[in-house]
Amino acid sequence: MKVLLVDDEQKFALMLSKRLELRGFMAQVFFSGEKALDAVEAGNRFDVAVLDVKMPGISGLELRRQLSALDPEMKFVFLTGHGSGTDHETGRIMAEECLPKPLKIEQLIETLNRLIPGV
Amino acid sequence: MKHTNTTFGYDALAHFGRVNASISHELKNVMAIISETAGLLGDLSDMASSGTPVAPDMLSDCTKSIVEEIQRGFAVIRQMNRFSHSIDHPVESVNLMDVLDLSINLSTYLSFAGTTTIAESDGQPPVVATCPFLLQAIIYQTLVYTFKHTGNNADVTVGVNASDEEKGWKIVFSGFSLNGFQVFPDPLLQTMAESIGVTIKCDSTADWLELIVPSAIDESALLDGGNIG
Image 1 (tube, rainbow over the protein chains, first blue to last red):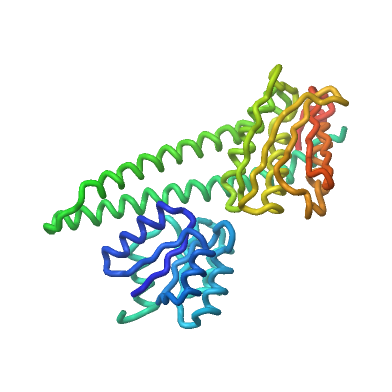
Image 2: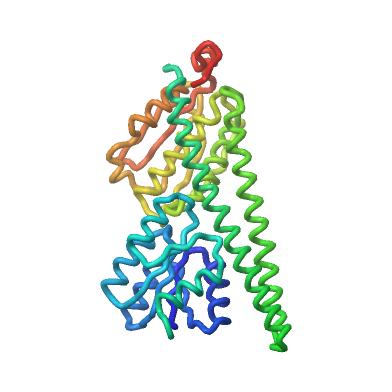
């Protein structure tokens, strides 16, 4: 499974990508929505995008809208550090799942496998 | 000078809430990094237990990252503590450079924050008797406006100079365009500033913005019979 991981917290994104790779996922990390869009526009294809909700520049929600336009098959998971119900509700409306930070890796893996079964 | 009762009531609480929300988000990011790094150490430990070689520099990178994030967390908590204590006294003597430093540090936790530099101050220390919490809120909101209108590449310089016209000090913001500052200050910020005698001046044609802070305010005018809010 190819995972597009976008988070402006670089250390978090890099650690998470390593943990995903140890579990057999192919994770590509971008620290901004703009760079992620460039990669998808250049033809790179991903099964699922794991997006931080709040980022400088393009937000996670806006990034989801633009990525969906480029690849309607792409699935999405939001990660949020906010405790407000708004973020979780927004995540549920806009995407398949919204997970809180700090993350439980097992919860993310279970979500990814549920979104893209058998990959 | 207006009484601060209504200003020091809900609106001040709202500012307190907003800033604490941004602090908690920052601390959550710190915890998230420590959590993932600890998780990765656990994964590497499992690999080693099953006989898979683990590069030593992966382990040292992880521990170094955890130490750095713990230090970052302590730094955030220090600012949270400073912010919490800024409300201890309705009026006290403060060095404007310290208030600026706190406001700027707090503003860095915003996702849309740009860069802010404090220009060195010459001459005598800019000490004023004011309401530290409200002054810090005014400076913070001014920075929020500059970031929102300039974007993440904002590079703001803030300096403190003696005020020519009035007894007090000028906090001068520069390094950004005032184009788009359609409503500044907004009525809430204007009321907050008036309550402690701060004058907000901006010139969109010349791209400067100043907060003129009086050297002292009347504490009895600030409080209403000893009660605040």
